[in-house]
Image 1 (cartoon, rainbow, N blue to C red):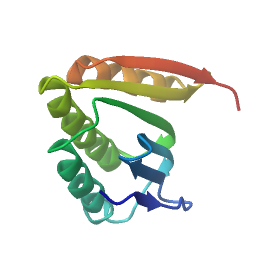
Image 2 (image 1 turned 90 degrees about the vertical axis):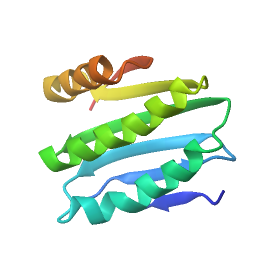
Image 3 (image 1 turned 45 degrees about the vertical axis):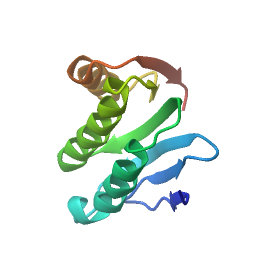
Length: 126
């Protein structure tokens, strides 16, 4: 499977998905004008990955800010990892947040409760 990589912009996050190196990271700001168009290639790649995932997948989210429509796409991404987890594979979500950003902390907690796969929370400083 080929590596998927998007450089960050002021409106879109950095996304790196690499099955070979076992890197699954989404970070930065997510405010794309057309959220469906932006995230469709990500969801397509993850759908392909889910048919033959690594034994262990650690997904790192390190979001600074995202809008409501992006939050729905993040949920779709997490649901794909939940499907992998349900198949018996080891999946862990690492949710990184700025220590003073209650919105991102709460969003991670909400996702954790909704998705019900292992989440670890990591505080970072600005």
